[in-house]
Length: 192
Length: 72
Image: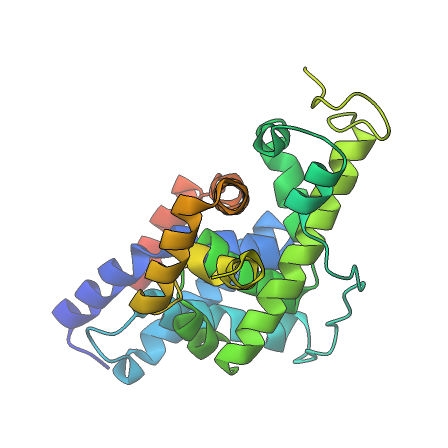
């Protein structure tokens, strides 16, 4: 066990990454209580294995890896085969909106509520969701994301690509259903 | 650089995952191509939207304090 002062310093540094871990856990479990349980367990495990953390390296990535491994062990029974993602083909939201004459395209994004974006992220299969969380939300490099997830960089890139396609398709469907974009209607983005 | 190549590399450019040379090539293309620049700005906007939307969730204060006590 580390000296008390060293343990305190370690815990303090680890807690600076709490929001990242909590957000990740919440998006993975979809349940605030389960997310807190998962994060607490991750921190306890991190404290137990702090000797394996190399000072000066990416503690956020190290903690996230512990948390997501626990998620797969405890919540998913280590089954990582639920990677099914509907094949939406090459769906590029920008091109879709441009083709439908919704201009300016970026105005559509301004009209989509944050809750709808979170909902679209939540609909992604966990293996794809966690890549979006790491790269798009937490700003991890592909390399750090690959190390955190224990997969090659190419896998990070392919999962990210497919996740973004699905995400854009979900946001497009929402924009259509909510009238933000009107099919075969006026060429302007609907004003709210 | 052709628009197709720019489009292929756009995600990695937005994610800052290209080499300096590749990024410079994209930058030069974007400066001379309004269509690709518009696409780039849209993709950047989308990435920011995902980030800001998901960042709204933060750990509850009571949970933070509980953890601090457990870990100390």
